[in-house]
Image (tube, rainbow, N blue to C red; front, side, top):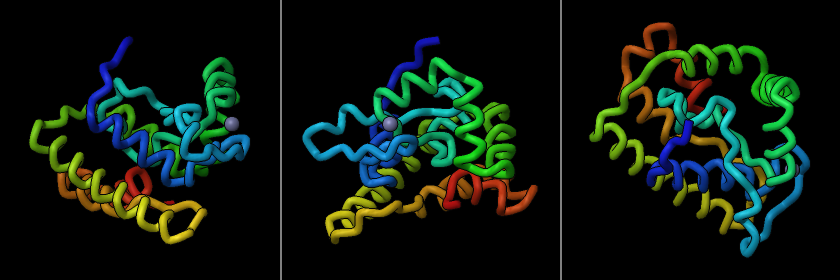
Amino acid sequence: MKVRINKLDVVFSQLVRSRVNFTCEKCGKYFPEDSRGGLHCSHFFGRSRHSVRWAPSNAAAHCHGCHTYLGANPIEFTEWIKAHLGQQRYDLLRVEANTPKRWKTHEKEELYQEMKAELERMESIHLGGYAGRIEFELMREVASRLAPERDVPGQKFWATTWGTR
Ligand SMILES: [Zn+2]
């Protein structure tokens, strides 16, 4: 199914790649500023799963080669994701991916604003000379606020799917 890319997808892709300072999370290749189109935002559960479309734990930065390879080898991709997230976070992500979610317009706008603020935060940290991984902070809060019913099973649910490690 072809899913149209919107402005949230664009910022989310920038966030996922900025999180790891534009380095492929599988092979470790670094992408300097003029070649970042070669580094993709790779979704584990596809964008048609609206509940996790912009969830930080549902995507990684992969170079074109690794993205293509993993896409063609789904069993290996699943193993990679499990190793990357850990079994518990993978299980939570899968539950969330299978939970229907219809984003209201105002929710998407709020998330978009949070994403832009998050991107500014990450970029300023990188500009300060830090080259390591930066975890998402702001979106965990907005996600929890937008769907408070999700907190019932425990904060952990949102913290692991939307937030940091
Ligand atoms: Zn790679």
